[in-house]
Length: 137
Image 1 (cartoon, rainbow, N blue to C red):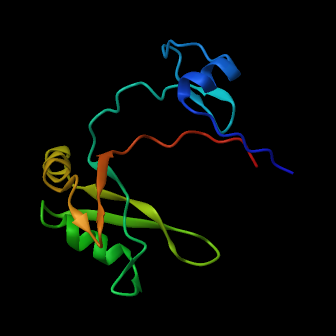
Image 2: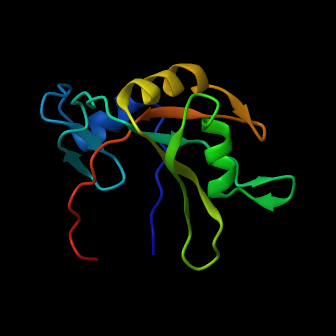
């Protein structure tokens, strides 16, 4: 059984949960109820981009890797494009990754395509962060 509480503002939530106001050690993850490390560190530039807010469907067809690659090919040659999907259904989770041969092309793509509308949604693009080790579930 879950208990859901709605708070008027983050300030009220901070009072209730007693969250420190400084973000020096990381951000507070409200879902997990703990601070997460390394969230405030700047992400280094790389040739791999994170692409968020992807459409789930385009023209009643699932959004696929080839479509993502075609969109990002406008900025330069794409080495790899991957739309992350759910295991059971194969449906897009709404984000993916695009890899270019070099960092300069990735930067160009980020600047040109961030905010571009695809399937009624504005793309949110940033440099991809390295994967973190996860505890076994």
